[in-house]
Amino acid sequence: MLHLLLPTLLSTLLLLTTPTHATNSTILVKNNCPFPLYITSVSSTVGPTIPLGGGGGTWTEPQHKDPLTGIAIKVAVAQDALYASKPVLTFGYTVDYGVPDVYYDLTTTYGFAEELRGKKIAVKGDEGKGVPGITWEGAPPGEQQTKRFVGTTDLTLEVCS
Ligand SMILES: *[C@@H]1O[C@H](CO)[C@@H](O)[C@H](O)[C@H]1NC(C)=O
Image 1 (cartoon, protein in one colour):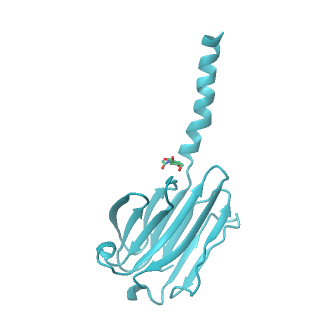
Image 2 (tube, rainbow, N blue to C red):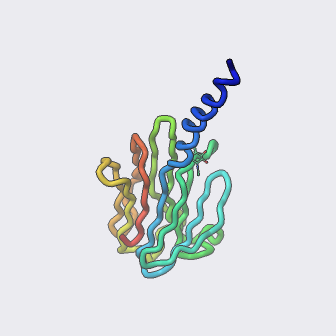
Image 3 (cartoon, rainbow, N blue to C red):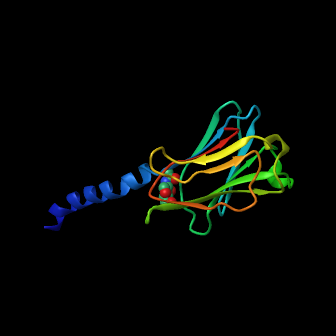
């Protein structure tokens, strides 16, 4: 009997597991500034630093979960910012596909890059889902703004939006 059930069982399992991985939502960074930005995805491991051209360049990664920590997308004007104590903008997120929900925030370390002062910076989710946004009008606000969305959504950080 088992040998008859097994193929059905296997294809059912495949149907159940494959879409979860194929449909991970996306994290995007869009650079509308007239200069490049440098992006580094940091979790319990530090990814490579990727240059992102200005004038509408985009960088993406599938939303994923690190069992030990959240994910921090480090965005800098200076290529060596992470290693030279220069200003870094951090777009942090923690996704849980089990709930499902996602927490996200925007913070700075080593100050705020002069080049970004006066520029609008925004985090947005999918249209029409009521995803709470984060908007900085030219400078970081005084207080920390951690947002949570229950459900799944792409999240876009737009710099110089
Ligand atoms: C999708 O998310 C899950 C859970 O965090 C992760 O294990 C998997 O690697 C992700 N898929 C991709 C393509 O990053």
